[in-house]
Length: 400
Image 1 (cartoon, one colour):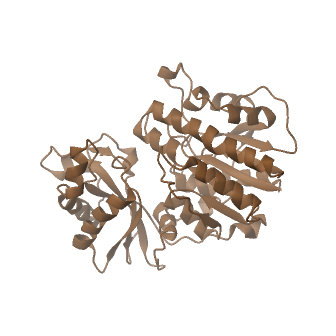
Image 2 (image 1 turned 180 degrees about the vertical axis):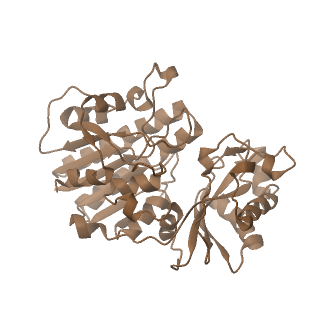
Image 3 (image 1 turned 90 degrees about the vertical axis):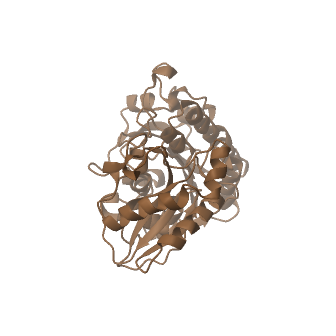
């Protein structure tokens, strides 16, 4: 028996007027998910514990069976695990986004945050920019590490967990009252702008009509995580397929196999087919029991506020990941149970995460049902199937 979680990050949404009052998941053309829903079970699950901030960190821990109230120690420490940062117990890890700020204003505090991802800048370009920042700002206390695309890491030796604003929560807003209260962190962000604003890479990006990556933004502070191996509780050996360091870090922390797929970049143009084939291979050829396939695209398009691109990301998940995985497992003669779901919503209307319940789809190849429903928020909620504690959904998948 093989088991899968296929997760469309931020895929859930709220009704959108331009889509006739439907959500992107409801409006999108998703024949494979609808077919599986008609043969399986749909319902709603509460992935974000009440009172905790909605994010991919808490939500994906929850989906994997780790209660965030017990195991969450901050987002950046999980990402630090992925990129091999040597964290000490006294270190604090912070996410270091390279963001796009407006450039017309004279004072840094008067600038507006335009893009939390600098146009989904490539890792190659961003590594050069971070090296320029590192050369000027690194010290005995602060250390910078390259991650993926716009997502990087700052280690603060003997630091403290401070409350910091997530950049995707304040898109289009002036940053003055969003900056860190800690003077050292705030000054480094201001200095990073001076270092990056006229960097040759950013001059060239602006010539091409691309968003410049012109400032560091620190957030997601936390301490070294302590997670138990996934196999200890589930008795299943698991693998993770994701383009983003957060999910890879969760896999490292839980002793799961991390599968790197060439061309997987967390964007709309990721290597869908490579991810699907890697999932089939790890289950049918490598002898693994469980695989977690994570797609970042719907979340990024939600942050961008693009209805068209979010629809495309959802449709690509359906046709270029879910369909070939199901067909590959069927062709190999494997019996399997799979859950398809988002980790949290990233509604177009607010361009950031929300803690709303999300729809799940459970399919068992051994027990196809005959139902009339489709996979979307409205129909999932109408079933009255509800998992109140997200970290228990994995037990349902494994029938524990």
